Every structure is written in structure tokens, then in C-alpha cells.
Amino acid sequence: MSELVLEARATAIIAIDLQKGIVTMAGNPHPAAMVVANSARLLRAGRAAGAQAVLVHVGRSADGRDALRMPVDETWTPGAPPGADWSDLIPELERQPGDVVIFKRQWGAFYGTDLDLQLRRRGITTVVMCGIATEFGVESTARDAYERGYALVFAEDAMTGRRAHENSVRNIFPRLGRIRGTEEILTALG
Image (cartoon, rainbow, N blue to C red):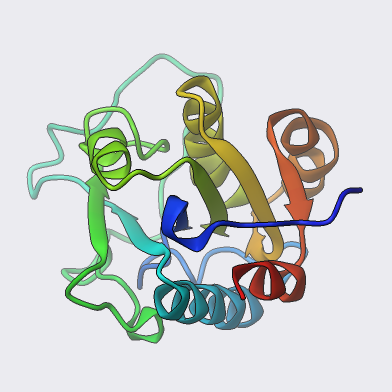
């Protein structure tokens, strides 16, 4: 494993789905509180070093007609209908005026949004990924980032999943980028 070096001004910290309706739904293997705390530390340090904070959240229209409805073997539905604040970003992220905020309507944060445009216009070449859930929003966004030519760093202890976190970390992410802990990423940000 090589030493991690990051050029802060060319780096974005992308926090996936750290929102009121999702942070309570995951926690395998890391508790959501730990993921939130580590993600907040990464965002805070990134902003201070000149990196771009990107806060991604997911939702749908009030009538739900913009939700994907594909034939699948296993559907996912929340236990109760989402509340009015379900897709609100959690306050621990300390949203700042310079943050890029992306509202998505599916797992990945690139499709149907201006995320790629916002990153490219800011000269971003590296993205640090954190958030919930590892095997859904984080992995989908990471795959799209890789295909668009961004260098990827995964903050393993700043993400958690529902069922397949370990599979993503062991089998998928090593082929897309570098897996590091929050402390090493903080050091690399300077």
C-alpha cells in the first residue's frame, strides 16, 4: 500500500446520503454515529485545506412518479412512508455556502445530476468517498466516478452498509481506487 498524497484543491470529499431518513437504516459493520463523525471530520478538514465538499442526498417527488420502477427480484421499501424531512441533510455535516449539494433520485450521484460538471469546473481530479450505504449509493457513485476518470479514495471507516459492505471493500473498491482510513486521509489533506 503506497503512501496517500492528496492535492487538496484538486480533491472533493463526497458524502453520500448522510440524511435524516438514511442514517438510521444502516450500520454494518460500522455504527452510523461513527460514520457520521468520521465523515464530518473529513469534510471539515477538507474545507480547511481547500478541498471541495460535496453533499449528496436522495429523494423523490411528492407523488413518487420519478422513482425507478424496474422489474426486480427483490424490492426495497422503507418500513414507513418517508417523512417530510427524510431527505434533509443531517446537521453534523455543517453545510457551508461553498459546498456543492447534489440531489439525486437513484443510487448513483452522477446520472441525472450536474455532479460531473461541478467537479470538472472546479478542477477536481480526485474524489474521497464516504457515506451510507457502501454497497448502494457509495459503490454506484464510485463506479461512475471511475468511468469518468476520477482517482478514487475510499474512507472505509467513514462508510457503512446494510448487508454487503465487506464485499464492496474487499472485491470492488480495490479495483476502482485506494482504500484508507479517516486518519490517513486527514494526514494526506494536510
